[in-house]
Image (cartoon, rainbow, N blue to C red):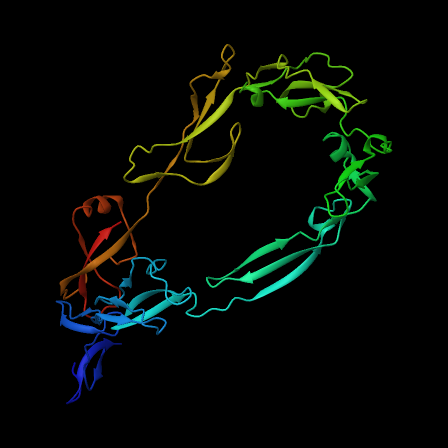
Length: 416
């Protein structure tokens, strides 16, 4: 098996040689390592990154006004004054310019904020004094708000309220029942009332405001809270493992039928005073909570007798008592200690089952030799192997072959 004169064999395909007129060995697999410094034992190029150019000692005049900053030489990627991109030199250049530098492949790059020369600009907007002071009754004229740009970015604002005055006025207002009367009133209805402003300091003074809320019509306001029984689970009130008694106490005019499921055994009776929409609570009564002595069931993943070769089954099924389960689970039954309402130690009622582990031949590389003929039952990478073979190759290897390999190269394999 050979190539024509002037060509070289670089591989084998379909039992014949692959030929090329020249052989190149170069660093092109990783563009970050373009320089070859040698070849390893397997014929693979040994490649390294290209050396980066350093930056020289220099000086800069950021605003070209004679205010110079000097920078010492440094390697590629160095930040000055560093080490973070948030670090700038303390010196302020021009009106507000601040700078930092980075060495980029032999050249210093400048990064800056602010300006060497900056002229601020201003704009003024107007707002009614009444709106500015939260819609206060009696306010007149306008507030003047001036915004001025800043050299370092953003803007500052100043507010001129000197032109705000006072007038005698009547101002219609509204408020919700809940805001006016308290959190237990309905929120939707609105109470209408008036505010009245007077000007004891004259037309340039600050208004004094009163209202007629005390006499406003509030007939539309109704209490949203009602007398009722409030239920909770026994566990939420510090009684884990408890449920409602089968014969709970009488809580007329209320009924346990509205409590919820059997775990709801705690009750609090709320009594509302409709005159002022306030209420009082009886406090949580847990006297109807009793210990649930129904047997409980738990599970753990089974421990196989031979964990090297066996693994718990993961197939699912429905257990008669536990419910959805895996066949590799040990299912335990627990009786309940009525004195403490806690689980007694469990009794194993369904042992978990185990399956054989699956192992495959895995090549860890060639041993550098070939075979004349294949063994009668050769090991192929990716095919199954036994647990005994797994144990045997834990600290060693066995020979294996790739199917269809005409060279019959011998590889070292582990059963994993």
